[in-house]
Amino acid sequence: MTAIYIIGGICLFLFAVCMIRAEAVISFDGEFGLTVRAAGIPIRILPKKQKKIRLRDYTPRAVERRRKKEEKRAAKKERRAAKKEAKKAKGASGKKEKKKTDVLATVRLIAAAVKTAVSRFGKHLRVRVARLHLAVATGDAASTAILYGAVSQTVAYTAALLDSTSTLKNPAKSDVRIYADYLSEKTSADIEIGFSLRVWQLLDILFRSGFSIIRQMIRANAEKNN
Image 1 (tube, rainbow, N blue to C red):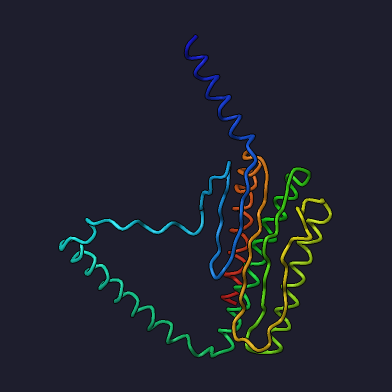
Image 2: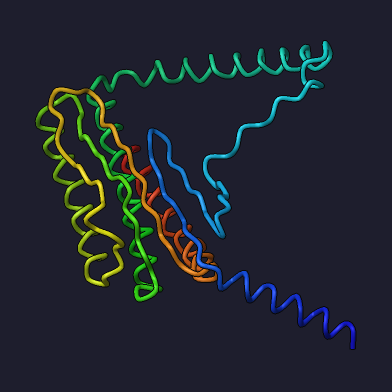
């Protein structure tokens, strides 16, 4: 009988946790980030937390071990640099194309996550757009115009998807700025978008969005290689 009470208590606890409303926050400021907030507690998934400084990592033996690892890493880095030098024949145009693919791939990742969330739990989803700043630039006017068009189209599709389900929370407070910067050499972005759902719904979306993000990353890598 006691075992039944314990199992029942565990099931009730898990049910209560799954019914808590949580928020998944997608951010980008030079680096893609994903944080889940539940009951006011933030859990950072991406990027990984930096390791804490420990005194035992700075003993003479630890320092010597780390020095040897750094030497091996430096040698490996030199070999990679030599390989990159062989690929420099592509010139500056190849670098610009890489920048184009990076920013467009990031926007597509966010669009894929939004699409998955809306298709699964559109009625229960609440979306908070804190910031969506995109200054599109490639260093070339023609390339910038093409990239700006592609980014604007993806963002417009995402906005229409959210508007169709009335899931956008406080749209008047959303800070959205997307423009073509013909004077800069590199695209800059500052993004923070939150998706609010029950914990079990959020876990379902994170699991399904993971596959969507993997597909988008594979597609982005294929575009870079081509």
